[in-house]
Image (cartoon, rainbow, N blue to C red; front, side, top):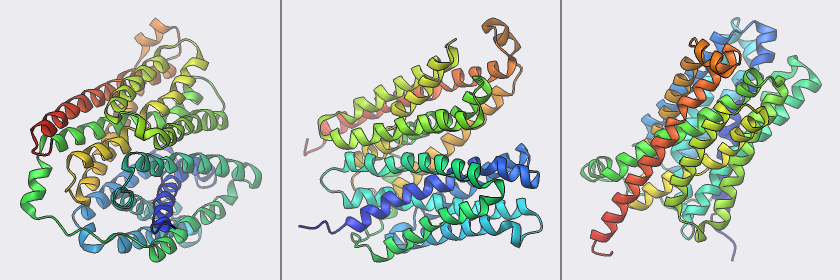
Amino acid sequence: MPDPYRKAKIACRTGFFLQAAICNLNAVLFIPMATLYGFTYIHLGTLVAVNFIAQVSADVIFSGLIERIGYRRIGVLTGSLAFLGMLLTAAAPLLFADVFFGVALATGVAAFASGLLEVVVSPLSDAIHEKDKYGSMSMTHSFYAWGQIAVIVMTTLLVRVFGAESWPYIVLGWSALGAVEIVLFAAARLPADKKPQKTKKVFRDLFSPVFLFGFLAIFFGAAAEVTMNQWASTFAEKGLGLPKVAGDLVGMCGYALFLGIGRTLHARFSDKLDLGKLLIGGSLLAAACYVIAALSPFPALSIAACAVCGLATSLLWPGTLVQTAKALPSAGAWMFALLAVGGDVGAAVSNEIAGLISDTDAASFAALAGIGTQEAGMRLALLCIAAMPLLAALSHAVMQKIMRTSFRESPEG
């Protein structure tokens, strides 16, 4: 019997691939744009801030609206905004006298679409996978990792082959993903939209201990995931002395490869694995990877720890969504949206902390380790961020205890 939700599943997976393109294109293309238009690292920081504000705004604004508007309309809107944002990015040199203003505006539009993807794709994936919610959520989220690898590798190669001036055409090519998403959501069979929960029920779930610790778990888990994802390339280049292209491929792509492998393996063997134990164990392994990357005197071991951290953190975002949904089965799409807010804010806070620490005077640490101050600052930042996965492990441990107690006390248990 054919799968009635086949197109919906493809739409979910394409959505995370599209999100990877939105989140990584600016980082890969920043050097070409800086060469052509004189962008500075202050401009890059501004683009990161615009991306964060727009993404979290989408999470917050639509957290209570998705069940009223419906999956299909949100999905079509998401694809439309992603397509428009990338189109504006590609056309910025033609449409705006100040190219950076155009790129920043386009980044905001595309990032808003990225936030909407978090709002719609996870609850939709949960709704259409009735038999294997655990593995299916991991498989769906794995497409972010595969998309990140594809965007970094293909965009880097295209820029090297065709030159920095080709960047608008490269962005235009990636914008096709937004058009594909529009078609998929318009044509797919989708499950019936849930009726909006009563306000009293929403507040009861929102302030329940299991949701609060789920929020903390995804806050710290996303911090551990995204910080290493964002810093692996810079650490490989500035901290370990690798060329930029090698830093991107070995650092970011190495991390993303292990991230995708971890999620794919969990999707394959989820029925044989204890997700709660995996989340705690993965968090502890991630903390160990941060410490090894920061303190190892061997560059190869440091970069290997960065890559393996992808495996360790692979379930911290999708696994927390699944565990919280299991504990609160009647919660609506608002739950996924607010957890996405927690993940986005955790990632932003952790990245900011890492940046501040890496910019501090690390002369004492440099002298102790016998390395340069720039490398010392980056290693010290990674060492401090090891606290994030440790706090994620603690949050998951408390969450598991609450769930076990609740299930024992429930009439069905």
